[in-house]
Structures are given as C-alpha cells and as structure tokens.
Length: 57
Image 1 (cartoon, helix red, strand yellow):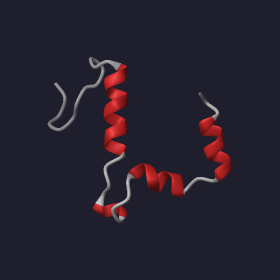
Image 2: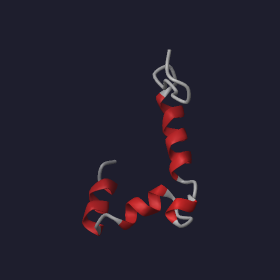
Image 3: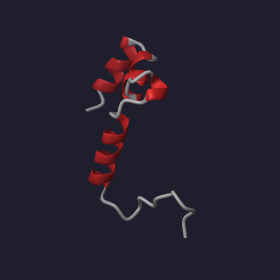
Image 4: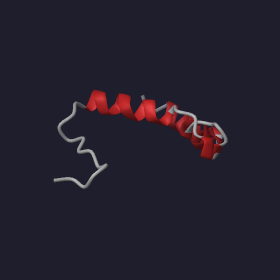
C-alpha cells in the first residue's frame, strides 16, 4: 500500500496522466510569484533549447 498522499498512476491511462500533468503545470503558484511552473521553466531555457523541444513532434 502506498503512503498517504502518494498516488499510483500505473493503473491510469497514459492520456489521463498527461492531462493531469498539463493541468498541474498550468496552475499559477504564489511561490512562483503567480507564474505557472511551465512559465518558470521556459524562463530558464534558451531559444535554441525551446526549438529542440518544438522539433520533437
């Protein structure tokens, strides 16, 4: 049995897990000065690194 607060995602469909990740990463956080984790991530990588991610599709 998993400890309290730990969720086992193995039984969930990959599509649902991806949706949950996307939703959680797009919630503004007070700790991040009301920016989203995704916005903070983008502020720490270069344009060249962003283009690498966009070419992965």
